[in-house]
Length: 280
Image 1 (cartoon, rainbow, N blue to C red):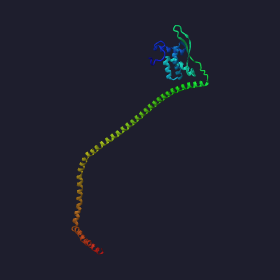
Image 2: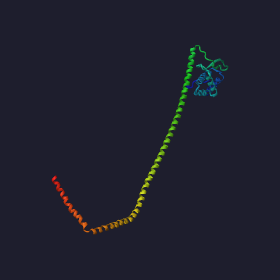
Image 3: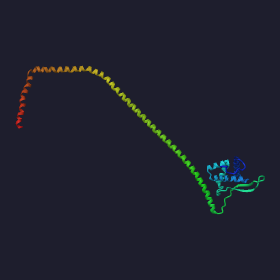
Image 4: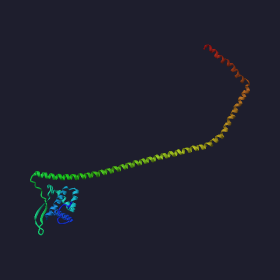
């Protein structure tokens, strides 16, 4: 069984058959007509119509398919340019025609003339013409709209990717700036802490220096202290001499006066409470 092997053999193997079909199509598009056998003409009719349909689409994918089918970029560019200018515009299908010429001598094969149909379409009814043109135009528009949507989606994705990269770069720059500021602040704080620690270490040294100096000062004060103590003693001696003289001059009179005063005042102090008792 010949599974997935459609088409005619044309009396050759697969690779030879593909080469024959490609050469026939290239000559048909170059010369607009060819003379061949009926079997070969019928075999390439579908591929020719398919290439014209791709030319009507006009997108990049269709162009690549046509190049793969014909193998000639210049010829494909020429076909697409002719279709864009209006060739096959109103024709919904059937882009080729076949005329039987006769029999070939020897094998009695049917010889035909195959050509591209380039005349404008002549419909019997205007309604049919409008419908065909609308159908063909709608198909082409739908396919073109799909291609445009695909290209727009690709461009949008590219733009979104660029914007995301820009935002990420901006965020990284902001984070780097913030980290640098934080590092600077931390360095300043560390320097301030170090200065405070150095000041705290220097303060006890000053106290020690003062404590070391105090014994010398105490020794000096101790040396000066006896002189200060001797001076008041001499002054007291000087003051005491006049007091003794005064006592010797007055004699016993100074000693007797206080006793008399006390004896005179004592009765008055004792009588004062007795006078107040009757009043109570």
